Image 1 (cartoon, rainbow, N blue to C red):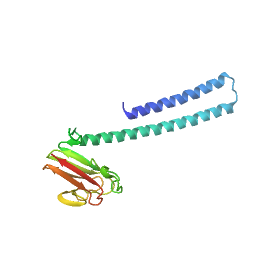
Image 2: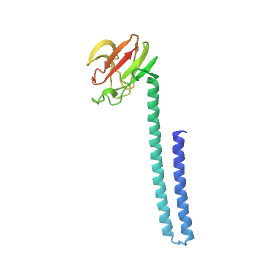
Image 3: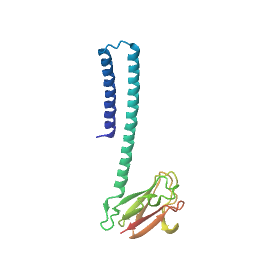
Image 4: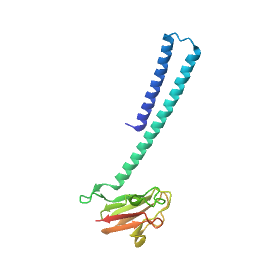
Length: 193
């Protein structure tokens, strides 16, 4: 079922519970002859405050649920772009035609992001596959072939600004290490078979 619909139903159910509780308190007061108007007014005010708290809490929970659903949808979308099948020997992702690798958020300032600087950092593909590096970070990055911050000249994205991409088609089998020129702790590897 749709996350927004579930959240709406939850809010409606909570509000219905608060209203019915308030009505029961009024009936209870009438049955036992509570004539004091100030006591009834206090009860009504308290019920309104509780209803408002419940409504606010339900809205916050609905927003959390919606945000969580968006994050899960993004993860699923990213996995679907990258992983189409697994290599039986290594269990690592193999893809055909096109693969997207993200330059992770915060990778430019996180010197310990290790194998999470590029998502996915170790890709296995077939000859003829194109990899597209997408910068989802706020800092500019590179995807430069080579190792130990030394370019081997096979491919170089140049500066890839936030929200931009760089693509390279791998026409020869082999292992291609790559890194970011301005953030050398960002490393990845492409294995082409």
